[in-house]
Image (tube, rainbow, N blue to C red):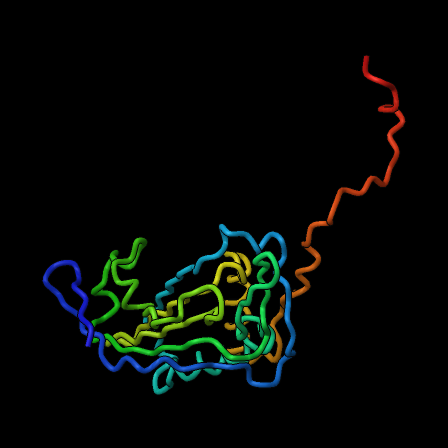
Length: 225
């Protein structure tokens, strides 16, 4: 059992933290290796981004298991975002590639015996409970050979939720993550495919080996004295 101190004299216990689970796409996805674009394959992007999203209790969810709904939604979303279920590998000259092997993403669920509103403004960045709302599973936070996406759902005593995401930044920037969340939301609500499909043709952003002159500018033919 883990304990976090709230502002004031309140304490909250995190209990019933489930062992991490692996979520894979609902259907067989392409088994292939994709090179990262030259934009994504930089030393400065080799880190994990952490995102926390809080939801107040919604009476329409009474009697439903939000954790099960989210797990099913993630499994459906991975069909379209299948590289996120793979693992990064290094090629020649440390070139990063995604091995789309469908090993899956990590999922954790937990319960906290405190109401969400008791946390007050402390949920704003920098959230002091990040390590509790987004557990660091041992040996899972590397760049090479580790899960590219980890999600933790924490249920509060009031029925509210916290959903934590840890995503490898080489795979998605903020806009890409927003598109992933939109797809997840749409599929949970019954859509068969996301309204905007991801594009995994990262070779479109690859740099050419050398500049290519396609137009002759005669105005520059004269010699400079």
